[in-house]
Image (tube, rainbow, N blue to C red; front, side, top):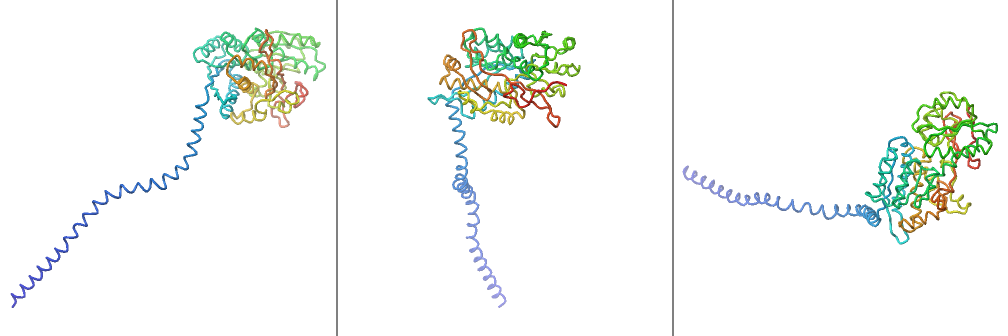
Length: 469
């Protein structure tokens, strides 16, 4: 009986084992299936929904406008023809301060032209100016070589002048020899513009009119003044100014008790100051450029030279002239332009001439925003230099040099820089005949801070002129 039970138990166990084995066999297949499906299906399908609906559509809508802007800019740039404007700048040497300001103004003009999309002719042709310039180191011989390079190697379409009359004259000669149109700024020398040039046009008021207004002002604010000393740098520009001033002052009844030049680069004015003191003048008029003018003014102050009226060329209108402190006070400077000038579309209309370009305020605000400094007349001259070329191209409706010359010959307009008109006489062709000087003076405001005011002519003054104490 026990054996029968054992056999029965074994039989039951065997039967259960077979059942378990039979049930376990099907589970093996599903276990192996998922590993197969996972790598095949999920990785391939996962990126698809991400890429298609959301991710591609949303960025596409965002990028489209951005893609359009560069495309439009590229299209304009592709349409615009390159117009190479060549010049040299005195990044080093004696003229670097004023030259830097001139280039800053020119760069601001170029920025404005680029913002406007270029210079457009009536048929839709666009020209986009580009600047090419080299450091002339304030040296005449480098100017000649570099302008030849600009013309012959760089293939400049138009030329602008370097700063200062001597350098501009050297550049103009090379330009004329090669039939290149040049607009000069920072160059007021009369002699340069009395050589029968064909393609050179002068922005600045000529040197012969630089200090004649100062003589008028002296006689107005100090009617007792009788004696003046004319002390000047022996360069072309300053000599032109002095030679024009002397007969003008004498014609007004002033006695020129000293008329003497000093070498370019002079730093010790003691001998001149001793001579000035010996002649006991009421006024000193003259100077040269920034470095010598600033030093001269400082040494006059340090030596307590008892002269009531001092007007010097070039240096006083530069904002950095105030760096000599109290020595700057009362010093007067002739200026081609100051931020206080009132040239406007309204005054142009009153003068029955057109107005062209930005307003005085627009130029001044843009300059201050870009350079964090006030513009000097050199800065404004740089901008106006480019502006005149732009206007000539628009008036000529061409970049053909002969047509540009014809347009400049006809030009008679007002800009933020003043009235511009050129001589068409054979000997003085291109010489500036309409632009006028203003005279500024360093004064102190109520808080004792050095400021500048326009003190002459009377109709343009922002304050009365003051005599030195």
